[in-house]
Length: 155
Length: 273
Image 1: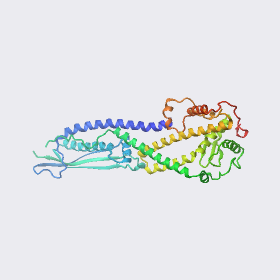
Image 2: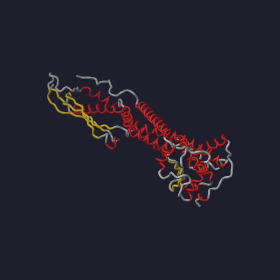
Image 3: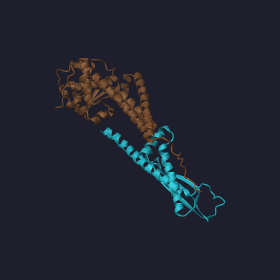
Image 4: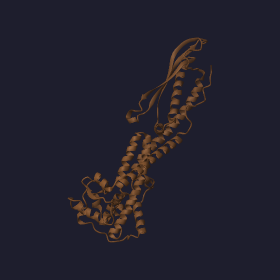
């Protein structure tokens, strides 16, 4: 019985992490795609200067950030992947979502404040909790920050 | 300036997470079993070249005495005499065996590297006949004859060493579990071999095997197995007692050992009352 529990609890957590994680991921992607379509009207670029023919009336910084952490299943999968090396697929989708969400939040701020475009967009990440704490089993958490210069154009 | 958002979602590698999990776990199980195989080869090769006398010198310590244990109390002497009777039917690899009683624990017996046998006080207390006790001692003798204690120690140390080299990750834990479970399969086979050895010794000593499996019949897992117990047999170090008893009965019938016979009472020194 003890052996069954010893094996059963991690398996249960893995199944739970997988189910909850994949449902959350599917829903998030659905929402991301809808909002990306909605925000398609606001041009964003990483050029440092606006195109010469633009008449800039107003400029301000806009930013959007997300903080992501891994679920039990993804962490387990990544740890196993660690052993052999290769693409950590489990984290790829997580970071893809985080990056797109951060950009969307930035765009949404720009739209709400009535700006017409965002230039000089930068994306940065920073660790907010170390995966090396607690004997290498700490939670890996990172922030993805997207920021840029929002411009209002003269009509 | 209007642009459709990129529909090209190429930042996530294709493939299903569960398929990836299966591949990785499968790979790690292979790593663990490969590790166990390497350890097994190394230990078997070492055992071939390591004489029992050297093992005894390293692990025996003060236990170099010949049977019965010199200076031991009456109990040790009586146990030693029983052991000596069981060893007359064939050599046990030239180990100078020693035997002792430990006070603690449930009814159990152990064989340690260097030819040292231990029985617990509760084992003696519940033994109904000398035949029952003789089977337990002969089972441990079977382990000594097969050099299982040293083998188990060698495997345990090497597997632990290899796993610590892999580091403390979930991956290493998966490989480690595979190695541990593989090791338990070896262990269950060793227990069966020791049972076979013990049955032959008891038959040679008493002329029958009555009472031999009494100890096993008293163990908590001697009853019929539940579905959960049957499903988790591969996690255990020993086969289930009901199976061991059944295998002993089949073996006795095949070898022509008499199943019935008069039980020998325990010598007075071994009785607890």
